[in-house]
Image 1 (cartoon, rainbow, N blue to C red):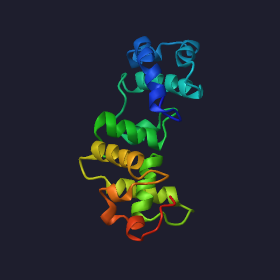
Image 2: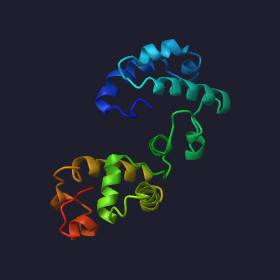
Image 3: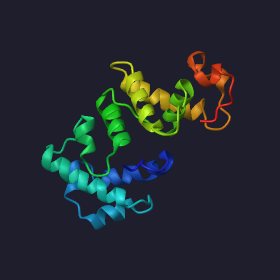
Image 4: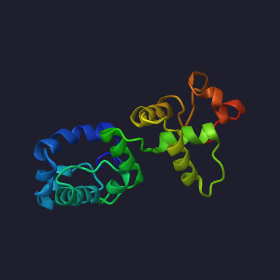
Length: 179
């Protein structure tokens, strides 16, 4: 949850201290909210701290202190939406769950065509689900996010270096990427 709306390098400054103070779900679940907010101080979006505490309490209570591996069960926790549930299921549990951050969405939209604005995100989530090679969710999600961040950038993409340019609708149409 720390990574929601916050850059990785910023989170890396806070995460070790937070984890030192709350090394287990049980430790976090037993904490008082003011103490958790104090540990969160400087990260902003304090509702995330409250949601993390509420989620830890539910995980301790309903799941024996272990986060569930299934996307549906993760989404029942406070502060965990489709993206975060997919990230946890994929990266922590090796599930073939889609993750659609800004970078991955851009890659999929450029490769497959953005389509109409209406219903665009729903179509992109469906594409993300169907393009994950079975048993390779972790690698695929990491690769597509990295591809979007490093090659298929929002501004000035380096299309000639792109490993998927041969199947890319935007590259093959000779259009300047607008997505």
